[in-house]
Length: 309
Image (cartoon, rainbow, N blue to C red):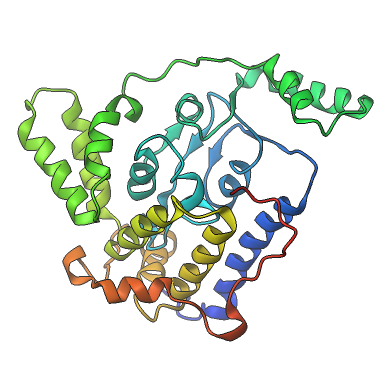
């Protein structure tokens, strides 16, 4: 462990995960519509909260990513819910690789509900505030949507290197049942393509991202997203909280602490994952990360909750 990191224990780490879940629940209890404006980096709890809202506005400055697997953790704060609901297996691809997604791509794949050029944000914010205060229907979704639509750019241009142009390969490879099968399918794509084709650079980068991440995190991430496909938001939050508790305690794997040491503390960028490869991870080890917590440790959500189903 890096100097000073050994002393970080459950009492310090767990409350952060509790806070994340509580914030989402509070938003689920709130009946007032919220407009999230993502005009910059959108990761972690910030994106977990923002993307769940009825209105999520991206701009040309927006950058979404779920880089947690590279830190020995896993995409959480509702990520298994919203990633699993993206087109095809695009969410599986984003969750596993941690690929950065710009604003136009966020809107195109459904991570954002609107795209507004950043230059128009002051006008949008002013309109939302002034007209909502004076109107009797300020909580009406159609009323808010009409205001945003005045500044809404309906079809922002996608970058020619956007991963959305690779949806055929993404669906073909990331629909596989295991991380090992996904990697194998990607590597097979490399061997069957002309070495001069533009897609090879994307394939190489995708494979490298998977091989660089914590093997345990990848296993957890894929299973979490797959389970999220058939679960409501509250079920996803409870499950993600369980996983977070197990991962932070380090009884099954200490990859999260090692990732923090290598990336955040010592910054040598060379985490030593244990287990070091996918084939050393058993189903039982993954099952333990998803197992129920003891006694009163389970996350309990209030009955009156407006979280999405």
